[in-house]
Image (cartoon, helix red, strand yellow):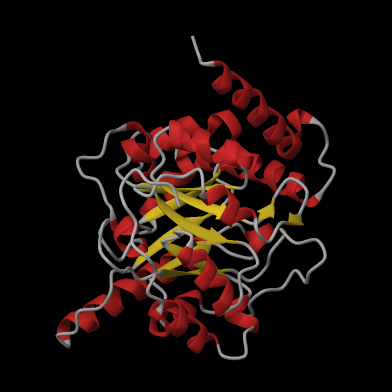
Length: 325
């Protein structure tokens, strides 16, 4: 028997997911169209990887003999209880964005995702989040392969030069609605994936379980306290708190900060959504965020290198296990 709050949240998730997925109703806005297209893409993926010996199919069907925590190490640059802590930076690599209806669709104009990721790592980004959806974000799995290849080559050069850099990771961000997408992303070399709570609703549990089985980490994007609490109940250990509400395209500039208060400090937290200044990032670090994600700011800021440098130089107050931000 589920507790009453779980049942209430279950129906809330169904409502938010239905608002996006449409329950078979023809799409009424762009986000609905994106999800309908993604269902079609997933069906094609299942057909193209139906062979039982296919590497993607094998990843879905068998438990991995190892687990990766590269994403956690790259996002949390300190241990709980240290007197001061550094904030990490996530570079949100995308050419387009469907989230903000009143802003230009174009975000970045780069042609080579690998070369762009190298620039972001040189700026000081700890994680590069690669948007692989083509219609909504202008990305592809080839972008993901290019970025993971660039990361490996960079790590090799640093090792040969005897340089010990900060931990880095590459994360695949897409409208993930099926385990086969996680398997495909891992085959292209990523360290983890992003799951959108507003899109998955009650299916979030299945996707989190799939990530565990495949030995990878999931960053769960949430917008509301209910989504955050539900993700925590399912065992999510990395939450990305978005100021943008994907169901209606409205920006709530203080939302991430408000939701952070319900999350214990042993959970890794990332703030995202319209973040573009050092002042915003300092405030977010002071309330307990481990990392901030920058998207448009890396393209529009007059000095993005200095912005990243400022964030990386912040000394935020300590966090303690089990304590809220």
